[in-house]
Length: 281
Image (cartoon, rainbow, N blue to C red; front, side, top):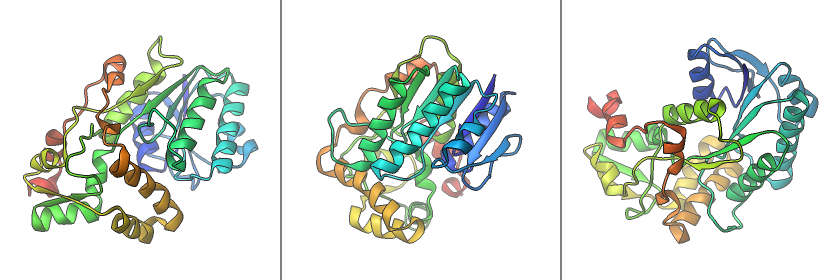
C-alpha cells in the first residue's frame, strides 16, 4: 500500500502522515508549500491544479483528504472534483475524507458546513470506495496562545462555546488513529462516522485543567482569529461557532458511534491536559 495524505504540512494532515509513516507505510504528503513530516515524501501542489493533483496520485492505493480553510462553494467543489477524478483514474482502493467538523443533520446556510457536506456527498457517490470522518472540536485548539495564556496566568479557560453546550472533544492523535483505521479496516466503505469522546460542558472541560470556564463572544473570537489567519478564513470559522451558539447546542453531543466502529480509544480532556507541561507546570 502507498498512502497520499492531503494537508501534510498542517495540523490535521501532518499528524495523519506521521502516524502512517510511524506504522511503516510509504507515505506521500501533499501540501501547498511542500512541507511534510520527517519520513514522508513531500509533494507540493495546489488543489486548484488538476494536473498536479493527478500527478500526486501516481502509484497511490489509499488517500487521506482534508481540505484547506477555504469556504467559497465553487472553489471547494473544484478541489473535490480534482481529488475524486484523480483518485478514480489512479484506481485508489480507499479514500478517507475528514470534514474537519461535525455536520448538522439539516442544511444550515453556513458555507463552512455546507461545502464539507457537499464534498462528503461527492466522495461517497463517486466510484472510489470512500469513508467520511466527522470530528468535533479538537483539544489542540486549547493550546492556542489566546486560550493557553489565560489558563496559565489566570486559571481561566476561555472558548467561544456557551458554557452549557456539551462537546465531545477529540485530539489530533485520535484523529490519526481514526484515519488509519478508516483507511485499512474492512467493511467501512460508504460510512459516515462521527468521532469524539464523552461530551463535557465548558465548566467540566475547565475542571480537567484545574480552571474555571468563560465563554468568549464569537465576534471577539473572529476579530482575534482574523489577525492571525485573515478576515475571510476567520469569518468562515467563526460562522460555525456562531451557529452552534445560536441553534446547534446538540451538534457536538451526538453519539460518537464511529469510535466504536473504528476500534479506537479516545483521549479524555483530563488525560490530554495532564500531558501538557504548560498545564501541569
